[in-house]
Image (cartoon, rainbow, N blue to C red; front, top):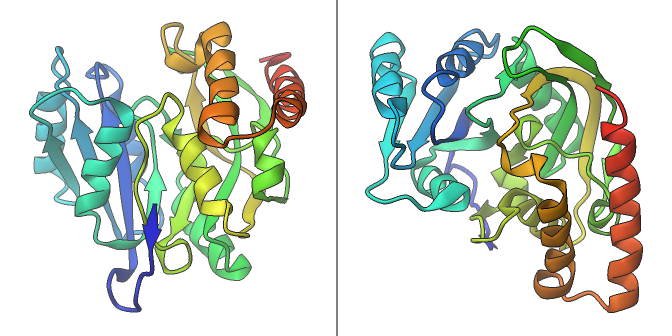
Length: 260
């Protein structure tokens, strides 16, 4: 998944923001605005238009004219989130890799705070707290708290890392790519931590996770089956250990979604 990243291979103070985009023409403008509003100025936003049937690509193209740090990558065929993220990772110039889904929003100090936390912790991966919001953005839920740290073993049974809060330090994690699997993000975090690293959590509300009725993560039965598949097929855990991790995963998920 990763290789060593020699000093100077990436631009040290640059954040490369990875955003897959599919059928979000009506939302991605707000997502881009939340990036342009960041207090940390050294970033590039790599938006990968995954052959969307709506006007997502045209909307993004207009924003590239507003701010040159916003960049459009148009795929020739639909490949899903992992392929889109990998296309952006191939072009990313920054030491820091941030993930932001095309329907979520960052609060203005998200990047500045995350980078300071990552440097202080010397962690390959940091994540933060956040709040859910309704599809129209009018309703904001309670703060979702996160643990201070997670190891590989702990993450197996936890749902604490929200993709749009993640910042990866490639000088520690090495260069990496996503695998083509249902939860490529969860799988990616596990593989970064598998070598003995520890992810550092900052319990500060810095992101808004938009709840859409048709999103992949809202199908709980299918999602649960895919988590089980990840344990058994990808991580190759025993039946007993898979059952234990799945129980912990389900409990964390229940607590997180018990109320808005």
